[in-house]
Length: 87
Image (cartoon, rainbow, N blue to C red; front, side):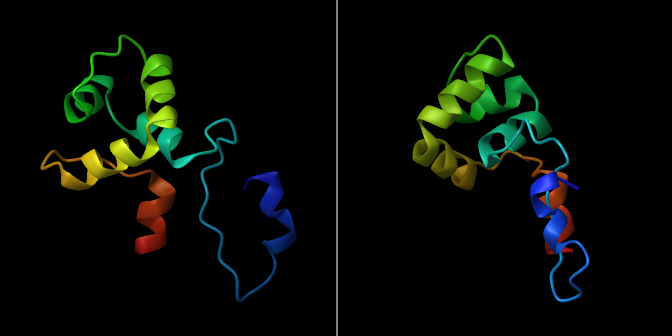
């Protein structure tokens, strides 16, 4: 569990769902980590050559990327912690 949630870990009424990778601290970074570069390039209509360029694009175009993810028929994998929270 991420260190920032340690204070909540023994509270029975709180359940934390978070990725242990603290370097991927935003949903955009998590989505990029969970999906292939080619798939996300296809969804966004971009041609980024590496994960860093793609995540820069996603972070600078949050609303546009969110809408394209919402509207796509492609199968996107959500980060594990989100899947676990839904289940």
